[in-house]
Length: 250
Image (cartoon, rainbow, N blue to C red; front, side):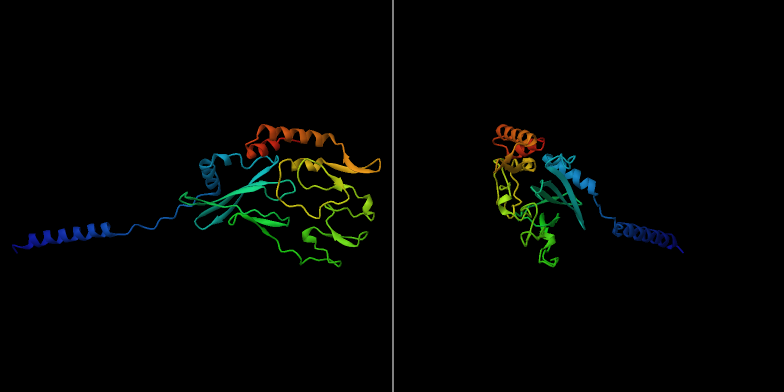
C-alpha cells in the first residue's frame, strides 16, 4: 500500500498531539496551603511594629505579655500591658494572616473592676458572669465579697476593714495618685484605670498615731514616690516613657 507510510506518520502526529494536549491542559495537583507558625506570626509583627520588640518582658512592672489564638487563616496576637491590681493597662491586637497580611484590632478598655478573661479576637476583657455564687448571706464571692459578722454586711476586705468600731478604721482613702489620704472612709471600689505612681500605693500605710489617723512613714514608699516623680519630670511630654521609667521604680 502506497499510503501506508503516510497513515503511520499521521497516526504518530495524532498521538503526539494527544500527549501534548494532556500535559498542557492537565490541572496542577492541589498543593497544601502555607500556614505560618505562632512564632513566625509574632516575629513578623515585631518586625512591622518595632515598639513591640520588648514583649514579653521578664515580669518587671508593668508586666508585658503576649497572648495568641489560632484561626483558620492565620493568628490573632495580642501584646498586653498588665497592671498591679489592675487587669489591663493597654493592649495592641492584630490578625496576621498566613500570607502575612496584617489587620489591627482596636483595644476596648473597661474601667470597672470585675474578673474576666482577655479575648485576643475581640481585644477586650470579657467579664465573667457574677452572682451565681452567692453564699448564705448573699455575698458574691466571684466579685470579691465576703460576710463581715461585725458589721453585718458583705464587703471586700481590701477596700474596707471588717472592724466593729468604725471610728477605729484608718485606711487609705485614695485609689490613685501619690498624695496619700488616710481616714475612716476607704472607697467602696476602685476603677481599673491605672495612673502613673499607682505602683507605689502598695507601700503606703495608714494608722492611728497620737490619736490621729495619718500616713505612717515608710521608706519604701518614699523611695518609690521619689523615683516616679523623677520619671514624670524627665518625661513631661512622653506618657509611655513615664510608664517605662516607672517600671524600674521599687
